[in-house]
Length: 209
Image 1: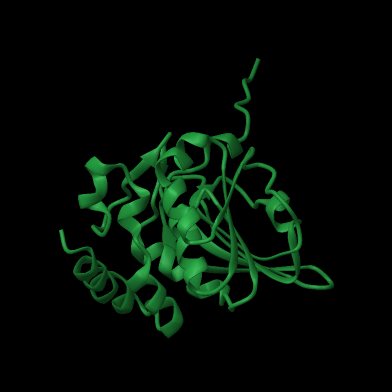
Image 2 (image 1 turned 60 degrees about the horizontal axis):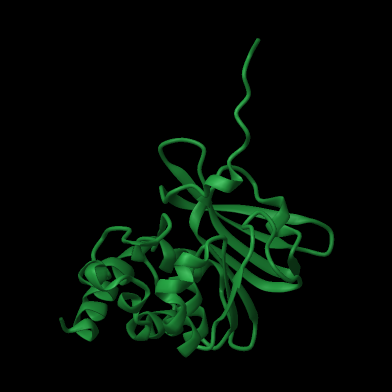
């Protein structure tokens, strides 16, 4: 399969047509080897309009959705970025010149995608996703959805830091951008999306007596 041609088709038919105009982001998407984050028997689906599984339930976000999230955070070369449950986002951010860390709860994801991430200079951390590693991040992004406002993630941003994630409590979620300021946190809704929700962030079920 000609993956370079597939990437170009993806950018032309799924990214540019959805108002993703950032030239640096487009260039990174044209280079980032999405297929290398998947098991060998799934690489054929890397650039289709689906969410192929990496391992342990982790799926790559739709190209349209992740490109719009990444454009919203306005990533700049030299910034520090954390991709929570976001291996493809990590590769794209690294291609854009950011110092990038990928965090997963299950090492099985890195068993599949770890070699490609390492070649891109992405650090890999296995830890519960409810508690992002490190602190003082310029950018945090996730390819999975969260069931509610992720205050634990927002707290790990530096002043001026941005978090882009999908909040989803029903069939469809809303992609949102949080910006941490000196006096508080702003929230802006971006677009509708429906990636899988991170199970470990879901609230515990309650039972009426």
